[in-house]
Length: 149
Image (cartoon, rainbow, N blue to C red; front, side, top):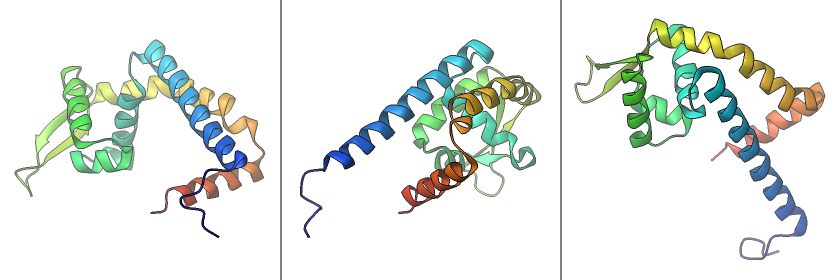
């Protein structure tokens, strides 16, 4: 059964369009919430949140890019802005002089803490509360499958 080159079925197309539309809507609405709450974009919040995990250990730009699905140049521009705002610091990596390590500042940590209740509420209201525990588990398995190479 040749499927790779054939047209999508109605079910395939509907599922794909539903996924894309729901993702875009959630990200757009979360971005609006974050801009109102702490004057950050979703991308900036994602970087600060990532840096706040793992006991605040500094991360290389490449690690941030990989973990946020951003490009290196996108992360570089974003980190430059976050440095100017005082949310992160950027230091040359002692092991590799070509690389930079990015760390969260106290101001960045306070911003994540200030945004967390609103973000948690948003995720629950717009996502997790709309599913049963079993549905959430199935959704997570589906996402894990989509993230496989």
